[in-house]
Length: 146
Image 1: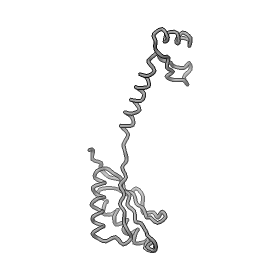
Image 2: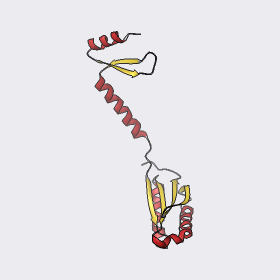
Image 3: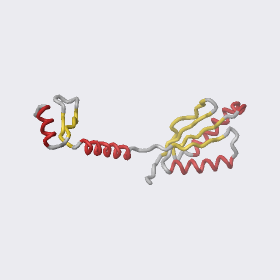
Image 4: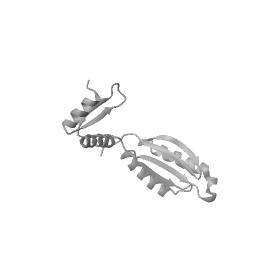
């Protein structure tokens, strides 16, 4: 164990910096090193940790309460592709003006959508009305690595 003065003198003699590693320890842990190099390595570690975290991609699919069969199938194919690629799918029915009267139609449409996607993803949140939108979330079942 070296006193603060001795440590500072040693660092000064070596033309390096005294860097406090763990200030809450008793006594505080310090290291004699080049401070710029220390900062560089810290940033590098943080960057590696950030790169390893999983990035969640959410794809949105918009329906109207009176969506046609062909449009529904077209959007269903896109949703299947999104789920197979490992992205979450947020499907919603947007009610414009007086179409808010067709809440049941929107809910039926979203439940049918969830049922058709059963083998590709699971429902995270059942249809829920938020303002003029009825929203459902789907998570992918098996994620493929790119």
